[in-house]
Image 1: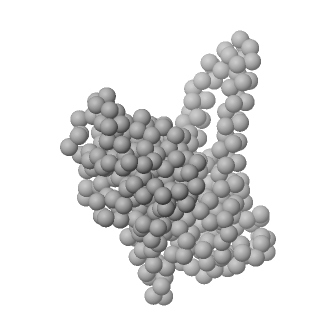
Image 2: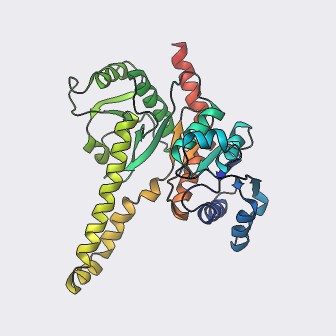
Image 3: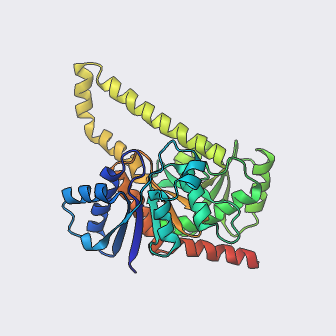
Length: 337
């Protein structure tokens, strides 16, 4: 099965200097992939000309005259910039010309435009943003929602769990993934009413529901999936990123304190590099917008060439294994029951 990926080449902090080379790298690794680069044709061709790409026959360039900026209000991105690279790339999925779209652009705009153009799947009330967070087991804990829905009802959280369960099976190859509900304690009696009611509903599903989990369980890898509303999820994500950045800075400053500590850093270089690789956020790049009638992947806005490649990996796996169709089928079964 051939896979076609549409890339918003202009999105993110770096635009074509990251997206185009990453696309070329990806074509080198996958002979069954075609790439659609959407954006300013002149800028895209300039980068392609400088690359050593030998797969131009599998690259298509589609022009778009506008760019959604990282600070653009959703209204501007959705209503005024109708020829933006982000929107035109999403339309490729809508028209069936691409199997998935990848963008590093404005998250709010990407969700709004995707929802407007692609619509939500039958049985799904709200789309959610899911991504993997590094854990101590050496794999990622999939967490959602990460900001699309600040306020949720219990049924919304159950739907998030159902969609994430299918996604983890499809993208990560994990059969019957375990699901945890983020709470302030493991006991059933703890939490607010929304969380308590969600727990009751999850226990009635066919999901592999572990029960309540706490914040530290995300990094322990206690469950494959952790579900929460978008307000809590976004706070956890940003706090995790901030902590990782702070610890990295503290370690660097301590090792640079004197010639002796610098020598110690050289001696500790191998284990430090191993740890850095295990928690490298770039390897977990590529959040999935679940619940839409099409595969949409959100890359981190500051992603480099290496990190953007992992977002392409997620789009490829999701498309090749028909993630959207399988989520749709799962909800069709739920509706019949």
